[in-house]
Length: 618
Image 1 (cartoon, one colour):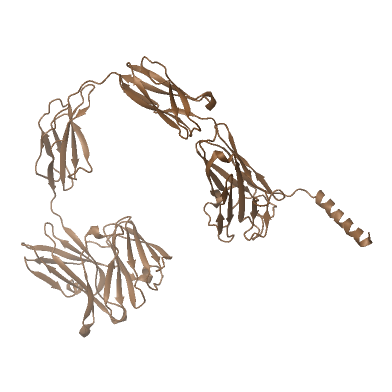
Image 2: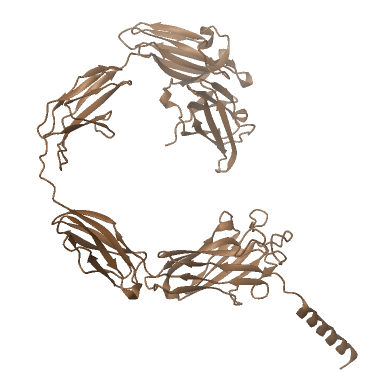
């Protein structure tokens, strides 16, 4: 041996001595939970404990944190397991993995997960008490052959071919047993069977039978004979045994009433199955008396009634009846009913709302020991009328105002009386950006049968030089509405007009609380889009959600406005600065109140307008 060789050997010996003398380093840990089965499906948690001072962990710099793991579990006996899944849970449940795989074979299953550290860091709690943070769970379905009182071992695999290990995102640093990772295996303990009788209480008449069910807390592995007994066979009898078939957990048996009284029904499993017992209670009654069934009543009532005034539904007294059930409904098929009872032969009703109300009556015999009912009576209806009130239709947008690129938009209105008597009412204008009030300007109209009225430009006809807003078409109390033609158009002077017709709408046409509607943006920027809305009689909140033509969410904004409020602005203003590029969809959801929502699309060259209303999406 030359001097250089001797020197090298001495240096190696020194290194070994230093390594042997170094204190044991801290280790992260992977733990499989130990649980007791409470049924055929068993959830077993899996934990990782992140310990400070280990190569990987929350206390390490970026790139050296636990961002991936492979956990391999063997279970035995495999015949006790029908199926098993291995999935994320706990602190990884809400993360999006960059890679995820769960291979399995007979008696084993693994879970491989990798997460991007910058977007989906695994948020371990450093040095949390054992077993650490839950990262996954195993869900076992036990086989019918899984024996009560046995255990299924759950062993973390640390073999070289399928080792349990933790790594960083790139896989450049890892921890594996036994050198740098602690593994703690677990088990599923299968307790002895529990037994119950359902229901816990039954009532039966003398000479009749009723059914009970014996139920184990999980399926039995083989046909299992349950012993049965009655605490008082003179009151009720049961068979001596009942068999729960293999692979099931229940069996039915009959109990027979012998004499009036009560008894306990007892059941017990064989000693080989743990010997668990259970009991139920049975009450045996005398047979009920023979009870007469009343005939169906014949009822009558007024054809009409006034709101707020009482009226009566009456019928002749029915033999054997101790009382009557009266059903009232606004549905002729009585899909929904309001029921009341009386011992007399009439019932009084008063309604604050106009509607047609339908009635039918059933006679009942509730004398001692009896509970019988007649067939339903004939049906009568009462039309409850209200004092006529003014009715309203809504014209969501009207105006006489200049637009972009030299356009000037006007609103013409034509009204026609198609009735045989005069009609009357008024048009009320609500200017934009203000809630409506009783002081808003209006234009009264009265039209004789067969005649019509025309307003070439509505706002100037109302004494308003120009403006933009919405209008209410209000019919006087008791008066029908006129047939209306409303046209919004660009007046190009000698070049003519381009425009669209606008239909007056009912309040029911508006989007209501919880409704969602959609507007579609122009396909390209040859057109401009304004968005407008008109709220009704309460403050309204709405949320706008914009998606591009590929369905990607690009903008969300929420707006709130007062009652009877109108606004029409450019789409970028309504969407808080988002500029449409073409083909977007704008979803509007009403969260409070109700409103008409529309999009006004105008050709930037011809100034030809069109309008689309956001209708409720069914």
